[in-house]
Length: 136
Image: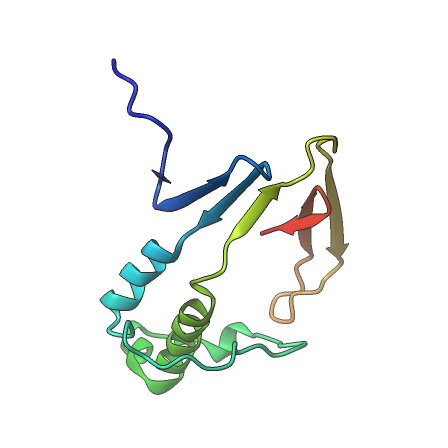
């Protein structure tokens, strides 16, 4: 076994360190570049990040057969996701910064009774807060 030095990439995640400020930054831009290249959107123009508040989805909106997956609505959703990735690929997560701060992790949970609009199933969601910032 030999020491290869500090890790620069782990599972496709680029690691940046600033030891003087006690920061670690994580970026997936290389992986996003690979995805954009696969779908031939690596040279696409940057635009706004597509977001819509209070978006309702139903199972009937999706394709009912595999052949229907090739129609335009599927392509539009795919393009929206790829555009979002393209516009956010240079963003990264930053950890650290205050050597005196104690690590704080909180978890919040919310449940909705019969909130699924198609089959009236209940839904539950979690969010973890790490030193004041939400983790996806």
